[in-house]
Amino acid sequence: MERLLQERAIMLGSAIDPSSHVTYTSHLQSYLNFCKIHNFDIEPTPDTLSFFVVFMCHHIQPRSIGQYLSGIANQLEHLFPQVRASHNSALVTRTLAGCNKRLGSAVGRKDPLSLDDLQFFLTHASSSHDDCLFLAILFCGFFGLHHLGELTWPDRVQSRDWRKVIMRASVCIDTSTFHYVLPTHKADHFFEGSTIVIAQRPGDLDPYRIFTAYLTSHDARFPVLPALWLKADGSVPARAWFLARLYAHMPRSIGGHSLHSSKATFFASQGWPDDRIQAVGRWSSEAFRIYIRKNPVVLQVLLHARTTST
Image 1 (cartoon, rainbow, N blue to C red):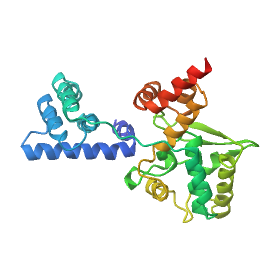
Image 2 (image 1 turned 90 degrees about the vertical axis):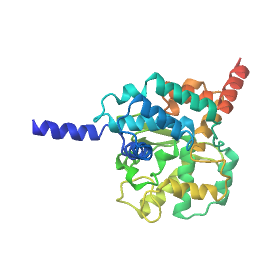
Image 3 (image 1 turned 135 degrees about the horizontal axis):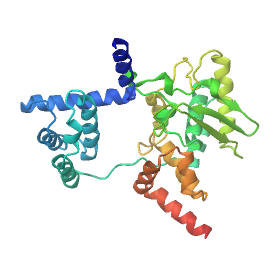
């Protein structure tokens, strides 16, 4: 019985991602601080949670409070089994809806990268290893519909997980394509993995040439290190490292999400059907519908492509 209890504890600890655990712990701390400030008992009743919603909506965007409530429910469920019922109660959901209507604001979305932007970075890059790495991540992110977090490590050390790192051993180079295994992504909660295939393109903006040039430098410097993406000092690049190089030449309206949205827009302009873009971008059905609804540029391009094809 003791062994079963130990194993169950380990499995329960593995149920959520380490980065999610760090975030949920932060959300719980906000809730505990709120209870301390207002002399509330920490039991998450509908009353207490609704007051927490009202309090937090004056400090953060109301659209983020739902994530806080989910984190609190995850962290307190073993102590207060009724927390999810309180979270979903009419009092809490209606309070949150009212906060969104009264205090909500439009989401600021990052602009997509263009092929001209890729050409700019290619023209101004040197032959150094780190420049080759930056270009390879940029081009693979664009043509592979990656989120930046799939190609770099989180800045927060506690959120880093070697299981999510793309490995050099998974790379395969063919005559006109290359592919590698993405261990996990947002729609893959069980590390089933996805094979990312990127094809050669004519002209200067050829991800095949950019990637193989980086791979040559990687293998010469780090013949035994397992990770695919490595800086000149042998470390896995962090998100901040990539963004610092990006912002050296791009405005802040461009960001990490621009990689994913840029190629989705490009594929839509080429007449790809939305189900194919969804599959290549590794979206779940619901996530893709939300993405299209909240990104009118992509929706407009999809509709224009359909009109042109008919």
